[in-house]
Amino acid sequence: MPFNRLFLVVAAAVMASCSSAVDTSVAVPNIENGKATFNIMCAVCHSAQKTGGAVEGPNLLGLVGRQAGTHPGFGKYSNAIKASNLIWNVDALDRFLSNPMQTVPGTIMPMLIADDKTRADVIAYLATLKE
Image (cartoon, rainbow, N blue to C red; front, side):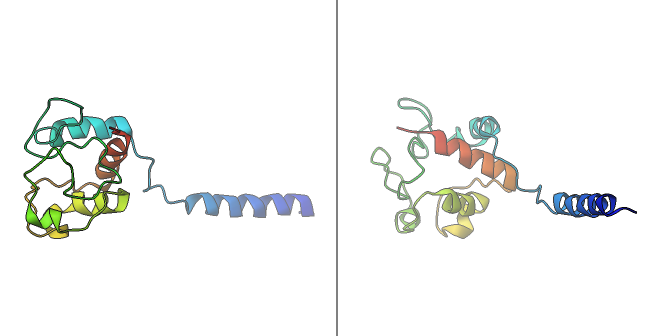
């Protein structure tokens, strides 16, 4: 086999093995799916609008980057969430939403999002909510 052909065969084999090693389990978050999930699961207690909406939980406009338990318009925070010292970034939200009561024992937040992809979608949507 001529050198050029051998080189192409080896290069193709290397490229094929590299492309199969790509981690496809980490997908780009789908903000629209996150919004739909939020509306089904979270909007029962949380508002994501400037006025109106649910009031059992704090309003989530501007949540990402805010310290847990500090929204000025909400007075029903548990002592646990106020003392948690969490800053709501992607990692903190991921841990919290995967199991709120384990992440912050004593929280009154009952809902969790067990599916990694769905949770990433919701977090991506929450990141779009600006005050």
